[in-house]
Length: 252
Image (cartoon, rainbow, N blue to C red; front, side, top):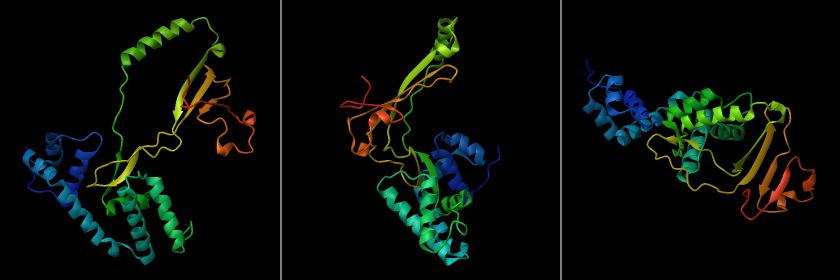
């Protein structure tokens, strides 16, 4: 294999990101993809923090030249300052949240929804200017044994044989973490992706429907309080759900 002698800074940053993403490439794969030696690829990864800082610095130096409108530069600066403040607090920030913050900053500077849209294109350019990537905060995942799923599917077909589909119901409970923050966040490329302490406040929801979906039973929602403050002046029996409560908000 013929190897190139050197990569540009942009190519080195791309290589680093290919290694840092959820399905990160190995040193050998990176070397093959970028047509460099394994030792060169390993050296780039060892210098990743330094290279990312250089790239971010170069991008920031070029911001002023890229804006024709000084107010648009101000929007960029305000949003980036806010973004770094939130990430310092380990608050996850998604693309739509960043776009909404940009719209708010634009409104303060006299823009309307027609003159500044904070489009997906704007978001992509903003990320490139500041070397911001999108990563998963919580990488924990539970795998399902497909063989067990297939075996149960076959057994279920036998059990349900002879029943009218309209008379076959399925009920399942789920937790609703109504104060949860996003599980992915935009982060500076050199930043370790931490999300801070997660809120454990939850409700339990029970949903039930027949197999054809023609009959859906009234959902059951379980909270910790029999009469939450937000239910003031509300008759719980008139809610579109059946409200129940216990100390843990779990189904017992």
